[in-house]
Length: 458
Image 1: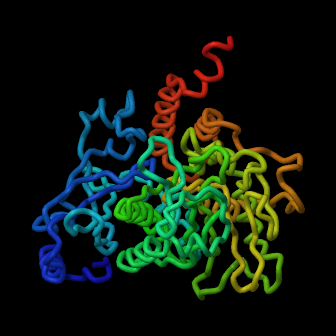
Image 2 (image 1 turned 60 degrees about the vertical axis):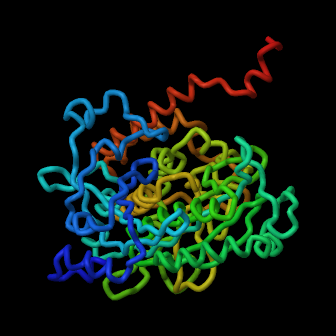
Image 3 (image 1 turned 120 degrees about the horizontal axis):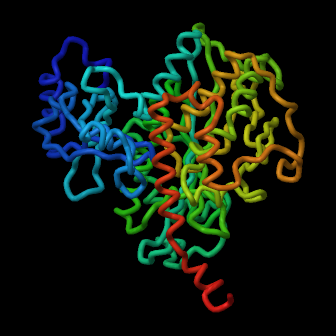
């Protein structure tokens, strides 16, 4: 059921048609996506589907700014100044997605929020991405976007993650298996169900590979000329993987660095821009790319440090961004260079594109695409010129560095010169307050490793 199908058909008629085509569904999970990329919402009987479709569902606006533990932000004006007022939940038009990994079949409805007066709520991350997409449209350009998401399958029996046991041999995975065909074959039933789920939910899954860590996989997605759909796909995919992993007796994690001594999990983003005639404006017929592409690169470099909080939003995120850890750590770009933050892939000039390699798999896909496309847009609008592309190992060169820690990233985003050229003041304030609260809580938590290191030694 898409927005294109609505036409003059009423919400009640749409709902009745959907129920008749899906008689097994009893429940709808109606959800919004908060700033941390966590889905929050309500379980609604299917006979109230018309209310969801017509935008009659209400939820507190403050849901969008909760911290990672689901707690209100201290001093949040959405809670205390307004009495925790409700907002209105609009149906995004995305097909209702089947949820078949719970006890009874259900469906998932994606919503986004507006305020009581009917205006869009500027603190909604999906609205932020929609705003950037509209700015490209005003220039006659459409971003064509694809993501690559890495994740680990882990044994859920322990509090700390450990690699799973092979469904074939019963032995625990104990070595890194980059592009291992054995791991792909051993987890064939799990991966098959993921692909089936992607097909049912309209997620354009492409290649799957076994990544560098034990039990780590990567799924690539096809390019789509709709950034909102690309972000929706990523959000739905993460929920799908979590659900299917549980169904198979595993757990799945998109933590950026679940193991200190194994590879982290990233969310790489590929994008190009097409004009109103469908031409790739990054394609110059050769290997270098156009001036517009280089302007976009310049915008990404200029905004990378202040947007690092979006790409690495959690305490754990910065363990992935250490030099030499197979993730970028510098403000850099290059051609076919995976040590740089921005890579221009080789191949046919017709597919000339930019790959942004900074974001972790733990980041909010809406905000990641908003920061990337927003940075590129600023570069194009201002005709910025990038530094020279690097050659060789970015880790060993004297280059600007991404923020070294979470606190520095929060400060950089808070004071960033260009953040409010991409995000509303409301969303910026909400995100900073959320991250500051999470940082304070982590600062009060003493780890077992600290006890082991210091308790009797000092």
